[in-house]
Length: 292
Picture 1: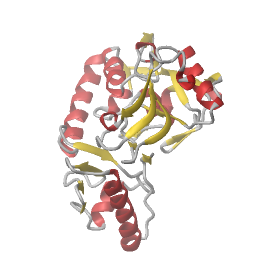
Picture 2: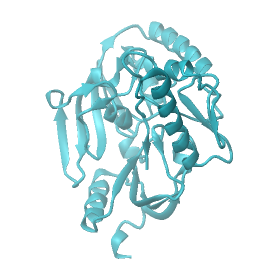
Picture 3: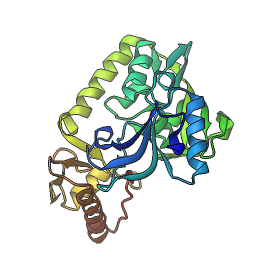
Picture 4: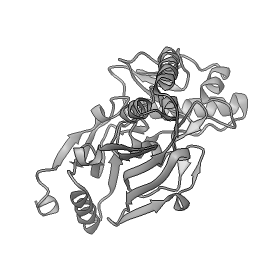
């Protein structure tokens, strides 16, 4: 086929996406690609742009819900070794966009670099976390970002300096299609102390989250300094269910998908929570997930 000619080794058609998301839901991607280097990434973007087809990026899938009918166009996953490198130089870490946050955290702690330990138990990739300026325990990843290499929706490769990046609550100016890599700078602290802090945070995190084996995702953004979990609970919605999707009894901002759950049920539960919180507390909760 002309569309994927030359890319047959990295592109698959009608690829199931559910396993790439936290809720383990959703249909197939019309085209799915795992480029092995930046040249292939750029080439794919330009090719699909020429055919006026949509292009999306998927990382850990912690903030994405795939519709049951699937996704048209191309879905790109930066899982190749080229995009998952991590290097430490003094108090700086250079990480590929595909690096898992857990690996990023453990590397920083081992090297005595303070800050990332706050992300204990947080799912996602470095690229996804930077794009949304992920935060935990009062700190956000953008705090440490010094530069980033990005690829635009037209396939242009650009370097972003600290002065060119802006970060706010769970959002950043890095709105390009892909964050290929980034460099971060941290303060030093004894690794032993960071390890103890990491372990404590991990215990607290796991105790408050749904069981590890459950298909669960964090759904809403916090509002005005109040946690979405607390607001949903105040509205009396803990344990509410639509079909086989349920609000977790551990943390009300987690939706848990059962074996027969559908994306449509997730969407309906999101709408139900928003309407009920608005009606009972006069607060407009904003989803932190994207529905494809």
